[in-house]
Image (cartoon, each protein chain N blue to C red):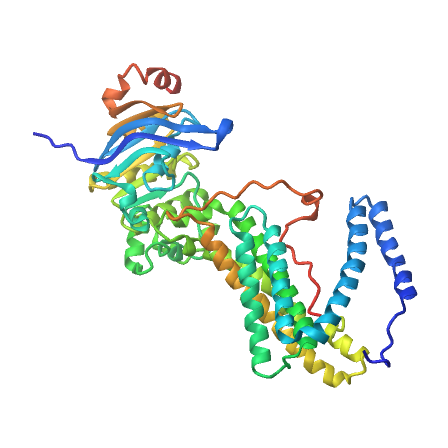
Amino acid sequence: MVYVVALFVLADVEVTRGEGEDHVHPLAHVSMTIEAARATVVVGPSGSGKSTLLRLLNRMEEPSGGQVRLHDRPLPSYDVLELRRRVGLLMQRPVPFPGSVLDNLRTGAPALREDAAVALLDRVGLPESFLPRDAEELSGGEAQRVCLARALAVGPEVLLLDEATSALDPFAAQVVEGVVRGLVAEGVSVVMVSHDLAQAQRMADDLVVVLAGRVAASGPAETVLADPAAAPYLRGAS
Amino acid sequence: MNAAVPVPEWWGVALAAVLIVATAVVALRERLGLGRDIAEAAVRAVVQLVAVGFLLRVLFERAGIPGSLGWVAGMVVLAGSTAGRRARGLPGAVRAATIGIATGVTLTVGVVVGAGILEAEPRIVVPVGGIIVSAAMQGTTIVLARLRDEIASSRQQVEARLVLGLPGRAAFAPHRRLALRAAISPGIDQTKVVGLIALPGTMTGLIIAGVSPLTAIRYQIVVQYMWLGSVAISGLVASRLASRTAFDEAHRLRPLAAAPARRGERRRGPRWRDTRPGPG
């Protein structure tokens, strides 16, 4: 018998911005489950609400209706700072902080030892010699890998990636994908937003298709790829 | 008060208005769009100073120290409202500015008067308090406007720290330090060159009133240090309060409230640029 472990459960989640006649619904009536220790890829056209969906999972965004649960507990019941250490986020564009690479790695983990920092760099394919380098002088691909290592330094159980490879050269994107696969193999849950269907097919255990703020289809990748509700987008994107 | 002090007659004051005409001519010729502001400023300066002159005479002769402190408190409220409005869009800016200025002024004036360095007399508390309130207001204006600009331009940097589990206060600390530095640094520069480029106001006033320059500088040094102290303390308090209200209870950066740009604002460059005069 196979037990499916629900990591996140979203129940009738709605996000509203603005007031009166100017209000918009980036997300409406979203109900879905994200399972633990799997790579869940969220795909959809630009402006469909993918990033908003991702940011709900670490409370960088708050639903205006419905509920998001983690391990069957409402997100607001967690200490929000602890939640963000457990649910890390890698942004679309690298945001290196002023200072050395080591300073960057210690931002969320001040007690990080130097040998652990070297191991993190190794994990993202960067040599030890990067530790003292000025993080703001790195190339885009190097900086994004440092940002990935910085997110991992906190030891998250879930890693969210918001189109984290879209601004990278193919080699750096490949490295990030490799790290993500390794994390999933170790039991870390990954939820990544992508507009690249080929990447989604490479990476996804589970696939979520978001269209105009609604979940058109979600579930195991092979099921969603055959789902007629997602077909118009999947055909258009492929 | 001192009959020996050479003071301009009213006809001389009226004649000095030719310099306002010169200012207006520059504004008109260069199409700065400041003609109305210049006229308003010139008229307001006369009306306000005449009113203040009458009020101060009453204050010095009848109100004593309680009245003087009330006067300074009134200046603090007005300064807080002015500095806060300059940071339009920043949540809680007026409150942060008012508390910041009140703290800076209370501590600096309190220490100097409490220690007996300056006497607790209305004719000292009111003008020195005014100088210090003005310094605190200008420093706080820079701090809050810069904080607002940092929020607008560095949201991604702040969020990149928040997603690592840092509280809003810590995520915003580098930006708050930049704002505080921007407010304090000009005061340090002015203190370094005080007396070399221009004689500051307090010292000038005392010299005109017949006080020996070597005596006048003692006063100026105290005022100069109070100036720096009030900017630093006011800026620190205001920036901490504003940083706190910039985040919601889930440590998310609040959106800046939309504020219409004032006429000519864009052409004036960054709103936190320091244009203040040195201490009086």
